Length: 96
Image 1 (cartoon, rainbow, N blue to C red):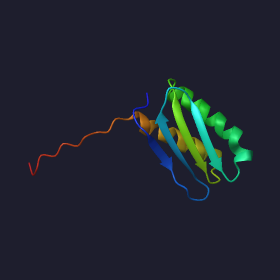
Image 2 (cartoon, helix red, strand yellow):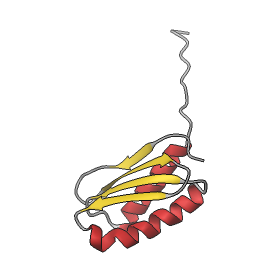
Image 3 (cartoon, rainbow, N blue to C red):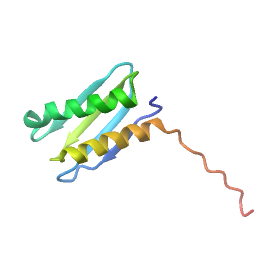
Image 4 (cartoon, one colour):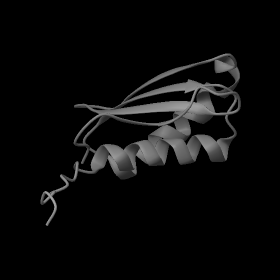
């Protein structure tokens, strides 16, 4: 279950930036210089991971800067993992 919006990756060359947010259904917004070539690959990877990690729905944005398939997959999985984790509050005991 997605709890918050999270991201993974960068906008550096040969990488991609993936942002995942909770949603009622699945959606993908994909952009990149080679979108016409890699859109189907990206749709397939995102759908596979979203079905496993967020069956209730997720809004996914991918800004591709030439990422290899393994990089894309790692970024999408990491973004979903981060979006599923609750923030852990650190308790500080002021010098004790």
